[in-house]
Image (cartoon, rainbow, N blue to C red; front, side, top):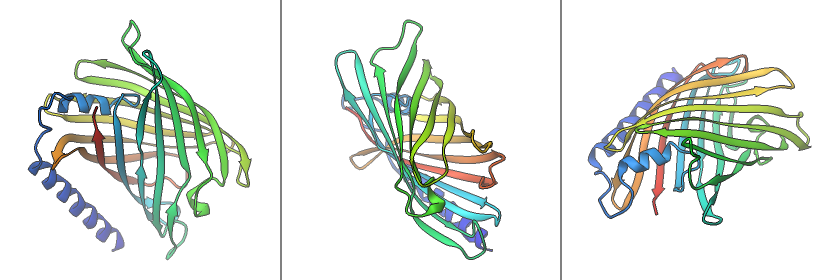
Length: 272
């Protein structure tokens, strides 16, 4: 019965987002980027665009007791100009988690998870072949308030992204690998891979298929999901935002994998 209440709450949230998007107007023409340009930049992890995504993840049938988990990831993206040829892109993921009945019936936990901080050094111009890329370090910070929300360790490693823009299409992949170097938790050696494919329309809408996969090499656990998302760049009062969401289907042998989930994004945009 609890699941039906949660699904009903999710449907009401999506309905309110849909109504807001219908009432909002497309960004006004002020000499800045168009809604189409912004949709394309949002598909590019190393675009020269300040954004603050609020990524809402609703996950159902999680863990051995088939519980519920809500994960809000606040993910500010801040580009910095280093010189006429290079940008530095800072991408931070701050997770706020609440979960019920995940490990046993009646269990409940709320708090901040481990923060992930990435830096990408990226050329301002694509290569001659049209490839856009960035590379740099990623850090996992031991900030989890509950043992269930983090690894109880500190980790670091390399991160890279490569993509191509082909008209309305953007496709590529982001990857990183982290090793633990301190902390009281178990050692970490994990690889993350996120291929993505986005089609952006002239009116600022976009359709995305993306997969997020994590392989833990020390305990041979693999978990991932594929998601299908719709999003639209709109103007609400004086603030440009992208609203979107879609379902996620999980796979792998990680015992804490949900059976299914839904993602709803609200992204604040600050175009230059």
